[in-house]
Length: 93
Image (cartoon, rainbow, N blue to C red; front, side, top):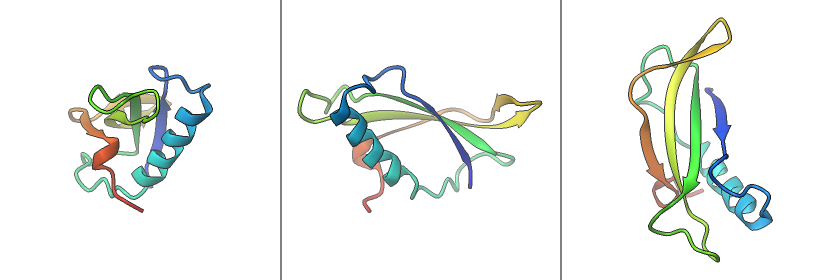
């Protein structure tokens, strides 16, 4: 299991509805198998931001940037190029 490092600085995590919708998406993201992660991957940084297409005041959908990497002396070293996905593309649970 990979360690997830979550970056929510681009969304209003203090809004309870946004936080609830994000928690749902994170549970869905737990079902991604990461089979295309670069060899040696130990963790990934997950940057969350509002989806430009489907984010509104009543419908909170997100865009995710996944950067795989490993640790070297407690420092995150990126591996490969970042991958992007959205709430709509996550596995249904």
